[in-house]
Image (tube, rainbow, N blue to C red):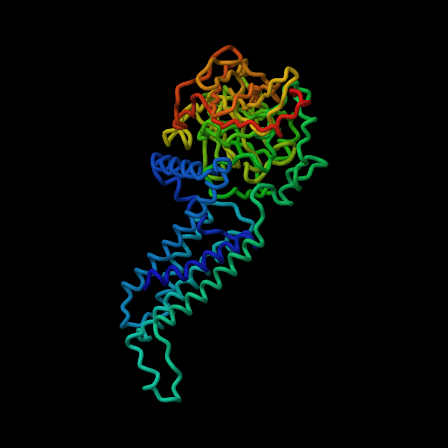
Length: 560
């Protein structure tokens, strides 16, 4: 019984927390709790759960939305944990508080205040909020206190009510008496009331919900360069990209060559984007330097900026997966910032902390020798979206995203690399991006007749080697000979390369495989390897059943 009451009361409590977070930026306790719990879980267990979750998402046919669905699952787990806590607490309360003593509201109040204080401390240590710490703490404690009082009240009333079997027959009661409800009817009423509160609270929260991603108006005003806004970046004009005049066109059905900012993948350890107030944010440097120094965003933007078109990929991206995106990054070279510091002898690494409790070590020598390494504050000419690291993240060529902190809140100059967040959890120490190639589309519905009368099916995909370049891509059909494809000029030397092969149509089921070579002629790794610990490798393939359709093969169409 206690478990059921705990569940019935915790549901509207969670709905109210959600409403408060959307309406006034107050703590969302379930997600704060989840974010504090994850770093305490052994790395092997985390990666095991991640593998199961991603495999399930892909198996259900939602592989193109892995990052979004995975975050939704993480958030659901946070709510489930706190909901389960309510069930356990309710069960213990009913089990150990003697019914004969009729617990006063003081008992429930103590339980509620205790839980509220614990969760308030968790929330305040985990996130940045729009409200003051005092108001945030009072909000959490007040709601849990109300939950505890309600628990005592229901427990007391239930003790005074008969079970359905014990309830006297209404015909035996004096007509003047009001019929007394039994426990079952009381629980039905409680359930109805809590369900109503839950639906109303959650519904209002959803109505007020802002899309995760763009900075708030205040953040945009503080972060944007002159004449820039963060309302929404204009749609990318393909004609404005550096490879606009490339002769080879992407095969129909390819993913976008340039990723809309709102679609840029997001993988991190936070259950939701971190909220940082730029009005109080600085980039502080401490540790082995002669004098601590902090930079404001205005100071960073006043330095010489660098624009780079970059394809970034998550180390947990499967071959052909969606955890890869291309956009224009803008920021300041890290070495320009480091040159303004007086680093003490022996200071060799930056320990970079993110607002999501993520941390990583970055070599100072590497930064001083490579101006491409930069503190990034813009995507596609606009302030970083909140979901992608607002207000500042770092870019390091050749590395997967797991080595590149977002939501940077502080940097300490230290002597040694003591292994970053994911390295301590058995992922690659270097995280060098693997050279891979992918079959993205077999465009059976876009076949055409060439000038020679042959019908062709466009096949396309991409190859990537980070900044090492791609010199050649080859395809193989049905275990035949490897055949060289056409390469489209890339957007930059840091982005993927799109390839295209126009396959002479043959009806039936066919398998297309692809491999690529780096600029120096090195063949990509062909041995099949999973994502852990160094990133996925192997020969990617796609199968398609090609069927003749005269309506798709106009006589006059020529190859494009």
